[in-house]
Image 1 (cartoon, rainbow, N blue to C red):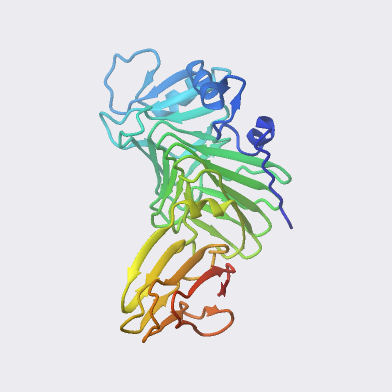
Image 2 (cartoon, rainbow, N blue to C red; image 1 turned 90 degrees about the vertical axis):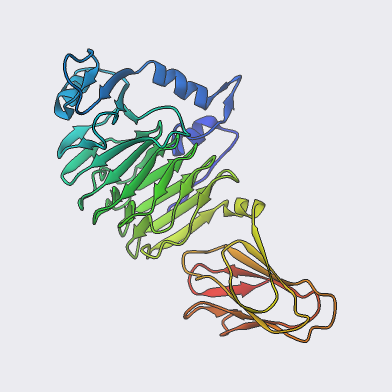
Length: 360
């Protein structure tokens, strides 16, 4: 079941339709971040402050169920502001909670470590779409809270302003198990997936997931999983955004978009001899004047389009050679190894995303 994602940077409406509220595109003299700020200012705010003693202000609640009853009674956009200053973390108890039009936040200080929120087993979050304001959410259960995706439709979930999701239990926080449905998760302004005991985002066979990073968005390794027959689309839309492709629990098809932006900030190492394990998107400079060396390429799996450049920087006729060794059962141009053995010789190795590094 193929999925196609097209981005048109000249059309704000098209871009917002794919990943709502996740770009700084300017409309006239107003940016979408300004629009978001204005919308947030017009929301009704409910403060969840567990452990707070009465009397409480009219919008402050120390009990989650009571807060949700009040929130459900108000129409329009609403904000739940978590405050763990008395009891930390704030715990969201088991139950089904309607988050349609509700934004979760902690504060607007992206330098602050953030408010701690724990989501436990048995929580179901309907239409949970907006997370921001330096809030760190940890899921400790097995059954994912967010699963309400619809066949033939694309649903966007946004993490921004230093917000994060992490799973310390046995299950993911987000699971798309609906055939033909697309779950799109975007990251902006230090929003991130944090590695834990389990992946954060799971994609079932026949369904698709989009992971898009904007300014300083970050997807850590081991945070995405998927069954054979699932599809995962990666999109990097800013040079400061990063998606780590070390996702061994994802067994489906990966479609990479704009990962070439990561070429703007490659790492670089200089080696003289011995064995060196290269990283993705790294330039490895070798001096072959005196001895042999070995450069071990990272795993090719789930790294399609990623590259490693190996360069002999010495102008003299070398007395040594560089052996290019793939990891595990991987190959280099379908061979067990590669070799550099002439002055100023270089090769770029590009992963096919499965098990082979192509020498270019």
